[in-house]
Length: 506
Image 1 (spheres, one colour):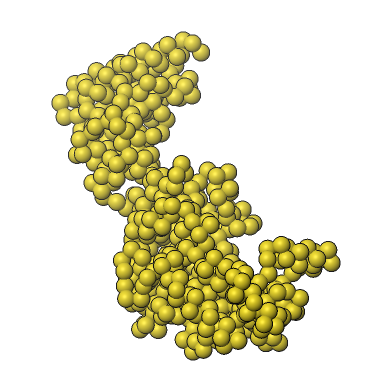
Image 2: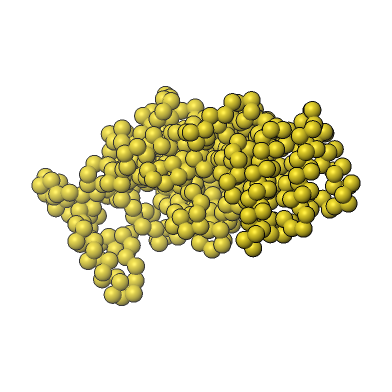
């Protein structure tokens, strides 16, 4: 297994890159890295009606941001290209006609109106129309029509498609790494269109031909493709490629946070979390929200896989060493955005203050310019209270600005009796300090509390609100040293006046 592993990530550029597609890319990447193989990025753009400008570059940008390196692909080249299906049209046409010539495919001349009529007739009988051996004799194709009629239609240039001819009364077996042995009845399979009248292949033909020619050893894709796989197996056999057919692994669905139903963009919008890795048009992405690529990778790895241990935090390199498709679950994986945030917080807290400051600075408002050394110290003060780098600016503006408002609940509860007089005295003692550092400030404040036989909450809670405006935050003594004596005293004096006014208004 360690030699010759070749996987492909083969998205369609039909719009944004759903987070489920990113998980597929991750599993391809981890499996490939684990076995020292090659990962291919192939763009499956045969459905030109749904092609979206810019979507291909978005896919490439996503992989590069996450660090999922491809050794071959549309963006890096390779000796088995082209890696964009719209550039391989002549290849598919050749193989489609090869199947026709061998009797494993046939020409179908049915119009859209005729197909609609066939479906409607079945619906009236409470049945579902399937184009297969049981119905094709009633349709217009090179099996039901005479050779002369077929030749006439071709000479007249009548539009037609090429359909796969499925053997009857057979079991089609898919040996899936995740799901085990899955058996399909060939009589129930749709004889899928392989080559369209516009000269483009369908997903089914292009997928099989490309996987064979690119020597893909393992096809790792979403569960929704499992029903199509027996048709692909039939094609591999029809081409005589059964011995080199790739191994399949169909990944479980990513479910809504409730665990009921497949996760959709609508669910994400409703619950307020992104479904894109990067921003797409007006929609925000995980990168723009402040997720670290390593944290998102760690979170996605656990959506359908587990290492068999209690360990949760894995670097990308650690994941590639332990990842195995055998530990991918059949059951759907519930998407838990709070867990995603938890992963991001763990990575944030593990960062050095210098690295965190660099990340925080990239989210800074345009009108704020703080020296990096000062920002580094500030990040060290509050990093345990952050989930995203942008939280620094949303929640900890008091580090660089005098509070404009104060928590009224704390003021109502703590600013009474002779508290103003006590804080005036505390201000005087702090002002007398020569070294305004953590130990000295702590000694003065705690000494005053003990001397006056007060509770810590009597002084520390209102003092925190004086300095920050809010009831929670970093260690007060470290914060005081960071702010400096003059700033601390100024904030205390301004706050005391505001507290008196607020108390009087109660």
